[in-house]
Amino acid sequence: MARTNPHYDTLAAGYLFPEIARRARAFAAAHPGVKLHRLGIGDTTEPLPPTVIAGLHAGVDRLASVATYTGYGDYEGDPPIREAIARHYRRRGVEIGLDEIFVSDGAKPDSGNIQSVFAPDSVVAVQDPAYPVYVDTNVIAGRGGAFDPAAQQYRGLVYLPCTADNGFFPDLPAAPVDLVYLCSPNNPTGAVATREQLARFVAFARARRAVIVFDAAYSAFIRDPELPRSIFEIEGARECAIEIHSFSKTAGFTGVRLGWTVVPRDLTLEDGEPGKVNRLWRRRQSTFFNGPSNVVQAGGVAALSDAGLAECQVVIDHYLENARLIRAGLRSMGLVCHGGENAPYVWLETPGRMPSWAFFDRLLEEAHVISTPGSGFGPGGEGYMRLSAFGHRADIEAAVASIRDGLRG
Image (cartoon, rainbow, N blue to C red):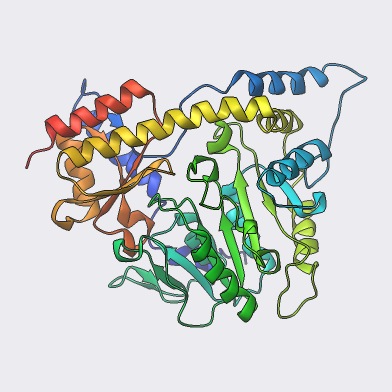
């Protein structure tokens, strides 16, 4: 008799963003004609740059000729895109081998799929608050244990608090762990790890044969040259870290879909020699995945060219200016907010630490603004809201004005 995976039943609630959409739809239905301002989901809004569009067109055109047509490509991504990614790292002084780069259809699936190569009973630590995919995929894999409604935590996971007191970057785990998920620039808090902070985690992981899963999807938003964009800028990280990256926010590929994961050959676990994780991930990808779209890969190569990077940077600067406008507007009202300087998210403290969903409803009702409740990212997010800087300039300005003019008290 067929049975379902029981670990799905332990998920505490529906995925965060569909619930936001449901509440927004209900409000719109009850208030026809009211314009909603969207500062919620981090979806890009600006057109792809000309160089990227030209690269995508070239990828399509190659399929129209017998001489240049291609079918299946390499499971780990075709050589041109991996070479472009390697050059991208080399600009930061980091050497990555082509056989260590695995191109995929995005950072989100890689974040969930990578844990499949580790032991089912691995102890997992996550930043709190954290991008929900890190938590939910490990719960589905059976690592979460029972959900504690009082603590709003899964008993099988280790939560690393990120608070205003520690600059929204966690202290080292107090107990032994096997996998540590880190994200910098952070989603949702907008905090960026320093070299010293990452070095402490690298030393911790090397000493305990733990693995850091490092999400660098927002690294292109870092403006401070002293802040690392890759964990592999930290000495020793090749022995203990995997890095996941994305074209979604760097080049506006949220709907185009392209990302990559770096699994160093030097990565060493307690039960395996160097190179084993790299081989296992290659086996996983070749079994479950036929490689990314060859058309999209052509767009990715263009995005990582000198011209493409310069054009993409203009779009990123647009979003960063949006973040500045949000942050300045909120602070002018006496609201306390963090992030938004080297990241596209502003992390807003709710007035009087009002529960996050209650303030979500208040922003919707009074200011007609859709936001993201911090509690949806874990218990450490309660009393906060994530505001997204992805949007057209006029829409961002209108949303800030609506909060200023509509929010009562």
